[in-house]
Image (cartoon, rainbow, N blue to C red; front, side, top):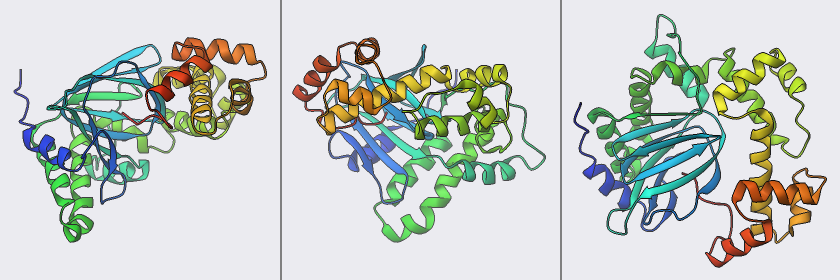
Length: 306
């Protein structure tokens, strides 16, 4: 078994840019330092955007649909599509917090870099999943550390940091996860078609999701679309929409002080009892009790990303 690279310097650098728990935007757009000082007592529900997360300290477990993905220090997690997740930090203390460098992904950048990484054509991807996890090698950790350190030097950050991000992405593309990550930028791939349907669902979550219409939108047969959507997201289109609706309803109750009935209607539920029932199954408590608990625990708005 290969020895994991030393992540001590990377952890120290991330911690310097995350003075307390939360997600911090760094100087370069779409680059974030994340810190959590205690294990989660309950899952955090959020919509995770396509991104690369390089873990420097601690451990986390993410549930997508019925699948559970654990990852820890010295590993890299690549989220390939906008996806509702339930996440828990499983290893963290105030002295050794969970620390992650997160880089948001742009499919257009993946397309450009994949052409350079695979000049003779993209290799065939064996599978599509919403989350890929692998070990980060010493070169990946070194690049992530250099990227964080550049944030303390504004001129260098603006000029050199984008090149370091490209280095990180190229290292991912030429590594074991590369063929699957490269599919994110292929315009006519099944992955790209599912991503288009995901975008429609995110923008229209309060409307009825007709699988036949979604399949027609992305130019696929209904059976092929349903199969590919589940392969990419680990959920059916209706399960995906339900997660979007319930997370948005929760956010509305927390931030806009809507009651359960109003929030349910706002996200597309006609029946208040159905909304309450599905909310309870999803979050583990009826809406009123859940929101009361969140407010007591100090959650004033949407939950932080993984």
